Amino acid sequence: MVRRPLGNHHHGPDTLLVTSKTTTDTTTGTATAPAAGTATAPATGTDERLQAVLRRARVVLWDFDGPICRLFAQHRAERVAAGLVQWLARRGLHGLLDDTERSAADPHLVLRAVDRRRRGSDLVTELEERLTEEELRAAASALPTAFADPLIRTWTAVGSRLAVTTNNSPRAVRAYLDSRGLTACFAPHIYGRTAEVRRLKPDPYCLTRALDAMGAAAPSALMIGDSPSDLHAARRAGVPFLGYARDAEKARPLLEAGAEHVVHSLEPLLLALRLRRP
Image (tube, rainbow, N blue to C red; front, side, top):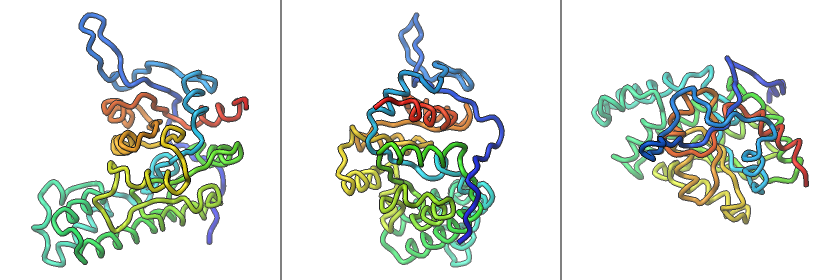
């Protein structure tokens, strides 16, 4: 096992922001998502709303690719998706996907499409295993999200329980966590993709599995995710949600989906935990 250094990696500006989901037009009363790059509430490590969100969290459910690391930073997701499409074509199944699906940059979109048309088949099982193998390769070169490592350790140190709730393979998650020395902060609570592909987020299945296993009530938990599917899964599970987006462009889909809180960096969470009073 290769253990990588524990430093934080930055790729471009990692600005600090907590944003509310809406602004209100005073003439029409219409609520709209803020424009890209607009901060509705600049945050500091002692921001009261952020402190309140963290104070209620006894259990923290982490999405994996995004909040914990950039899984496909080196082993690109677009190439993985194209490889899955080519594998299907070599099996004479080019027509199983439509043009949009064949050009998808997201390998999960390819897997979901095949599952919809061949649910329960050996084909889905084989395709899912191929995706798992690609995610394991990606985990070896994944880049940690800035401040994720110390935040995970600090949250564990202050007594919160952590779980991973992800659409990625749990094998890839464990491989990455092992390489960072973080497995003990989560184990055994790693809930990832299963053979039941239809239960990927936005289905709340992995979240409810985590809550049930940990004996936790949904309102006492917090989900940290970076996509609308994370937000929708959290809502359906009744779990409060905190969005992570490393820039305004990635924040926009979360805001438009209705996320109330989005941070552009995990640093304010780390500072808030260190300043938190019992």
